[in-house]
Length: 488
Image (spheres, rainbow, N blue to C red):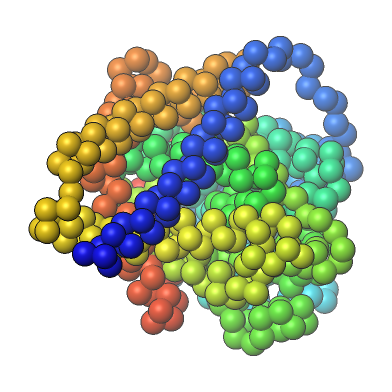
């Protein structure tokens, strides 16, 4: 019995700290949006973006369904100087053919000295105005495809997005602006919104109502919590270590000096010095952010991450449980791989908030959380068997979970809606509700997710831990439907 009591106290401490961290981020986010909603819109600071060209790199593997739609939308962004670089990473479907059919591309010579080693580049196609470039290369993985684009990019800033993602027209300006305001910013990004069941008209998302499928609703709730609460707060604490691979912006110079994205082909001196040979990860987005942090600290520079909730990127999320399970398992595996690679930074004061706050948070409250939760469930069963549990307390806990979820979701969505009211329609569209009924659906979906989707995520995360321990490296891409496009 003494052992059970000791375990009970340890679990109480763990979940108390977990709750404290979550509520701290929640109250910060709530205050951010409430205070922001009372501020007058005023005039946006005038910034000359023409001196800061951007290269948008889009790694594409078997993206025949959505690639043409994505490129057309990217061609209508509100930014004075940018190029689009599609990297066809050895697709086995009609991705390359679709691009050649839909856009006026012609073959150009492969020239220049490449800083980053990649799988062989077979051909380069380009439009006359050089706004669209297509690199056709042998398959090497997503990180390798980004590095191929990075070698040929002319932009001062690099925006990486997925081939099924669409940026709102002003997204580039909103993610580049933090770099111009503060030279210490190393990575910038915005919020992701589920593009499922949306429609594109005149290269913009319309008809963004709440999807019918519960599995998509749950992911919308998850994205709201992740981006508009957790990432916003962690960014302000300078402890955010993940900027979504679906939409991130970097300085090209920083990426090249720090060794580009991690792949088996990459033999950049800094990568070899920091990680050794043949290192790879199934999630390149976290690893590159942590490596940039390490590189900058070694240069005696305090780096910053900038998350802006006003910059919106629409991306398709899995609709099949099997696909979602694989995706979430891969994310968790990638988290474990990055934590292992940079374990010497954990609790290291030399790395500031990243070492003392960010990495410990991701280790204890993200990576290890499914193990602790399963262990806690087993403990509750055993304690119940021995009659050590108070049934009333269990009932109150059940009610408190429902009330807490309802309060968090309702207050955040209302605060965000009010905050975006004076700013842009895209922010309200990203919440995916247009009426009280839609809003109520999201609240109910959030509550139901605590007793359904939460267990599904634990299973996926445990699978990710297993894949991490057994060193599996299958990317496990899920099948996409694409977004419906109205031509006129």
